[in-house]
Length: 129
Image (cartoon, rainbow, N blue to C red; front, side, top):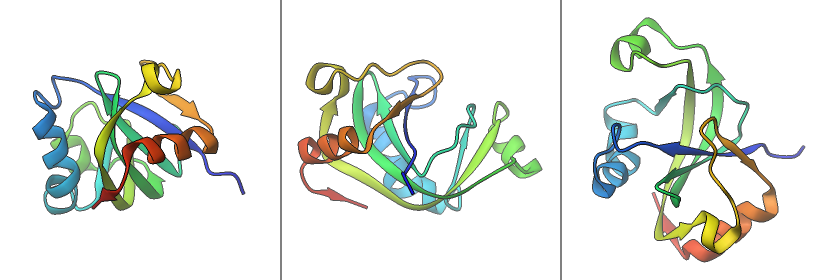
């Protein structure tokens, strides 16, 4: 079975600084969100690459995609889909998706191939949870 991999871009409104995004991936997702990634898009995905300003910061391994609960809607009003996450990885080196790999992150998510995902991981170096 081919894994579906998508790149979602985060906004400065969601994460004003790079550190806010990293903190969300390393601490906030598991502690505050109970491994629930709430998002405004609802695409099928096994892996979600998290980017901001054209840089890949890490990725999420998706366990399941579910409709948002009332609690999800209360915590993030524009939510359209909730992804239950098995693992969040933060890259040691942020990867310039367009400059390094020619991947342009579109407003509604950008699907990528397994080969492109491997390239991202290679350029990211070692990663940590």
